[in-house]
Length: 285
Image 1 (tube, rainbow, N blue to C red):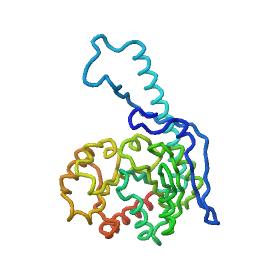
Image 2 (image 1 turned 135 degrees about the horizontal axis):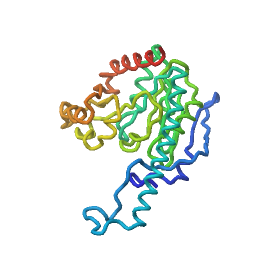
Image 3 (image 1 turned 90 degrees about the vertical axis):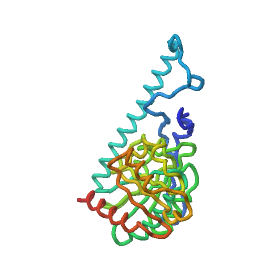
Image 4 (image 1 turned 60 degrees about the horizontal axis):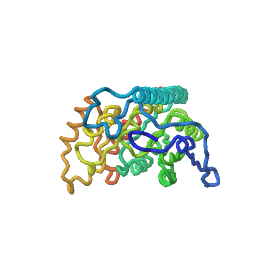
């Protein structure tokens, strides 16, 4: 179990379920039997150790345990990075523009993908990998607007990893020179650590979340290339300072590109579509 976020055991995450829709319109479950433990490349404080020091230093057993944990964490991330490199080579061979879309739960990732499916029709071919702990609801939503999609259910896992994405891409079989959006599990912590082989991470933040979100979750905003500030149609009803939010974001990541948009009203979506089209053409060149 992850010491940071408490997500599932290696057994749970070793068998994420892939759902796809065949020509008959039925979903099928796949249980790829890869081994996956959710551990991170940094040591974690232990409960009861916070707020005071050990006068004689940690015991040899404690030091040995920390060393072993760190070694396992580094090994897991190294294996993920190797699979991400394989994904990146695959994406390059297919001339795909691949984006890892991350956010808190409920920020509007799937609603935005639905809007993109409508706006990008006839401009670029879009396909989607959906990541959630359970259900196929999001994949069903994007398929309803004509977007080919594969659903990955991580069960108690809180992020997608490169192995899951590699298998899903091969199952999805996206068209060469197209756009692939990966909707990660709603979480602003762990997806920042796991490279999927994407062109860029894109972090979606809604104005309902609080303008200090970039300062509270700096690793995600630092890892992202693009910030989408969503649900701006709600600004008249909220005490949210857009300027201050963007200042916080650029304090963490000075090169962060930003789009202000509302998938519901359509404001800003055309500008994002133009950028995605340019990125897709760049990847296909």
